[in-house]
Image (cartoon, rainbow, N blue to C red; front, side):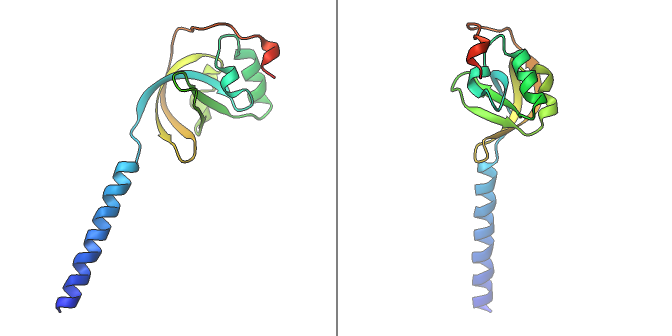
Length: 125
């Protein structure tokens, strides 16, 4: 009986620790500033003047991405319909990042004033 009780206690502790570890690794939704670009241009599309090029790339089958303006990290947007209308624009997005997959699920997107130099379209491709 003591052996069964010991095994049950050990199993409970392992499950509790696993639950805590998964709770810590689960990302919470947060606001980030950046640009909506396409998977072909990535960081190069994170500038004013990229809207037409981005729309063309999306129509050709590329995916929408979010480029964080602070660290230039590019995240694939797993729910592209939430951001397609903002391609080529600076935005604030509220979303959950999956760092392991390099993706983001966007809950909300707000336009921001654009800043920075206009990129030459010839440099995009």
